[in-house]
Image (tube, rainbow, N blue to C red; front, side, top):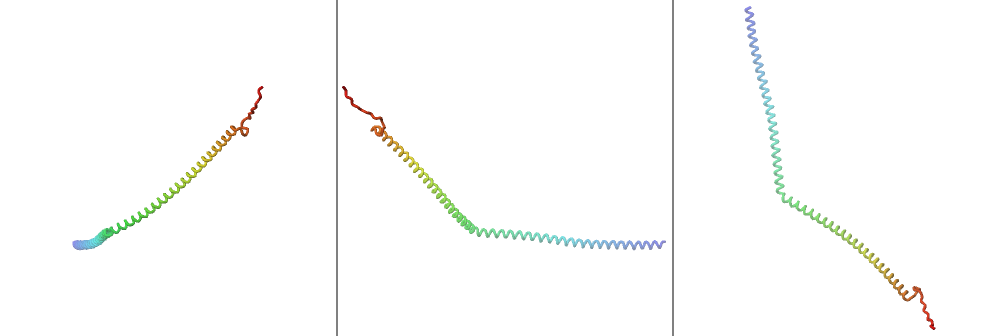
Length: 176
């Protein structure tokens, strides 16, 4: 039994040793896998970081390009400002001339329309005056005819013509 113990103890020693080995192997394999994982994560971190950096660089580049373009556009506008202002003033003056011409034409049309309306009113007034004068003349003529007729009537009465008054007879009688 003693031997068996020794054997079993040696076995147990051996198994303990293998256990340690397997543990150490598993520890080293864990360490390796962990280091691989760390490397991977570092790589992925570095690749993510690179992507972020690239994106930041692109954004910064885009911002700078926009600023540069805006600055150049502003400079070009500044250079051409006088030219643009002259062109704007020219167009404004041209539009003003056109509007003035249209306004003058419209005013002339209105003036002509007013003149025509005034002439028409004057012609109507003239016709009305002529008509009133004609009526007054006719009225005067009637009155004149009436007066003449009355005058003739009075003369006839005075003269006794046309049986306008009774006949008076005068006789002389001898007086005895």
